[in-house]
Amino acid sequence: MQKLFDEVNFLDKRCYDEFGLSEDILMEHASTGMAEYIRENFAFGSRIIIACGSGNNGADGIACARLLHGEYDVSIFYVKKPKSPMALLQDKRAKSIGVFECLELRECDVLVDAVVGTGFKGEFDETLKTIMKKLNALEAFKIACDIPSGLQSHGECAKECFRADISLTMGALKKGMYLDEAKEFVGKIKVLDLGVCRTIYERQSSWNLLDLSDLKLPYREKKNIHKGSFGHLAVACGSKKGASIISAQSAFRFGVGLVTLIGFEDIEIPCEIMYSHNLPNNTTALALGMGLGDEFSNLELEQFLDNNLPLVADADIFAMGILSTILERENLVITPHPKEFVSLLKQTNIAEINVEILQKNRFKYVEEFCRKFPKATLLLKGANVIIAKDGEFFINPHGTSALSKGGSGDVLSGLVGSLLAQGYAPLESAIHASLAHTKLVLAFDGASFSLTPTDLILGINQL
Image (cartoon, rainbow, N blue to C red; front, top):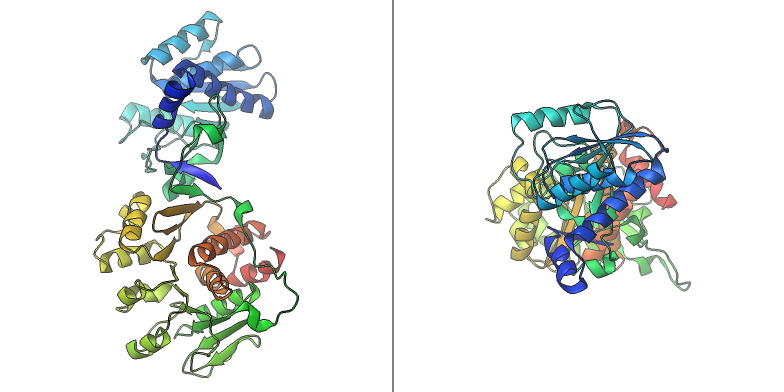
């Protein structure tokens, strides 16, 4: 697990004030880190162009050019002439050893974007838009210095944003790099140190990035046990029965001892799943909403929820009047996708917005929801999943577009419900279910367009 920060200027200032590290020293470490990455990954003599702006992001790029000069065919393309004191200093140093300035973009092996950094806001002017288009059109391996030019600190992207294969970010991870929109532009992300290791450079943060290694699976370590030792999940079976069956199968394969579908019609179900019109007495957790439709009346929903059992709520529940009652429960996990979360925000009088506004401000509205409903655990689906409860926030960035299929969310709800039924706390259930969900898609070896919920469920035994 790694820490995420809105910005790192205050961390840089701490280096100046407490550790005696100057701005120049930090910049030398940043540029050395970029140069070392290039040395490790590209052959001696490769052609490198570093596109530089007028500020300190450009200064990092100029310093990197100086460090590579003599080993590589490196040149600087000045998008804007140096202006900041550090950019002017680095330009003077680079020129003193003969670093070449190219006046027009040309084919190269490596293209480094050092045009603008975290201070950028708004949109590029027409000249810079044209240059960004040209940079993106070049056939080269593309490296962003700190963050891709055009990506704003809170994550929103300019219309013409640099598309990096990798972002070599300085000092610590920036939260804005993990907004859904940013995923198109950042590529892989690697942190470079600035003269002190990250454990010293970083401070506390309420936002964290989940690593796949954080996943804890529900292994069965005790020997004197039986099926009841691993809980009993009851899944409401609505009018779209396939969704609840998917969730039930997902939960069963993820370790829960028993799964019962609760419904009012006799239906054909997998042989390992039970079916009942009533909630079993030994139920340890509930799953509600997946394919629910209008199968349950309000009274029947109230009866299903007339207990203090842990609950995972998804899908259709976000359009129902009983939602406000559900949000007051203890031991609750809700798993909306963006459209459902927009509906939830409106129903709870937090905000009346559309999906586009939400996607540009996901962090803000997650925090607002958690302030109003501190007992609820939120799992907001997206290209990067956000998991949050009260003042703790986590981002799972490991999903892929292969999950953009009907039923994938039902698998996830089943994973969450399984862990709740086995006794995991709601926040733990959401974190580990989400990590398992994304690890399943990463392990899938078929074409990205071909993934089905059944593939995910079958893959659970390989985790």
